[in-house]
Length: 203
Image 1 (tube, rainbow, N blue to C red):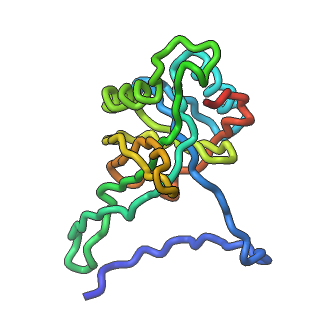
Image 2: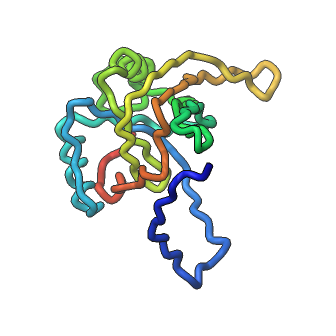
């Protein structure tokens, strides 16, 4: 049996495309804001950037230092049988990403400095403690920002990278795994503003 088909108006693909052009971009860091924040909306990146800058200056947006080894894992899927006429629908259940923070933020790296001499520990412990009330931004090396607007769970451990030279000191690293319900970077999540163009100071 073939179920009824409803024809759709097809999307017109432009002609004369320059094949081989690549979109090269690298995730770099996260921002976090409280889940009760009324986030700015609109399509103008300049206006959105100005609104987010005001949020930052009001102390309602925190931004991490640059991170390394940001890797998105393949999603996990739920298979939902909707109809015997069709194959099961595959819906994204969860998607995780891993990353590391190797930065040391101490009293001798900031001026003026009023926080802990192990401020990098304090930062991630704060995020771990408050993750249920935080929502993330994903910030790229070029400053583009994707507003993820999804709850997440985070786990973090302290670890050490051995020196490539015998007897050399190990490098401390904080290894993270962040898990999202659904896919936080699906095709509907576009960059909407740029942190550099908004003149937001970055750690």
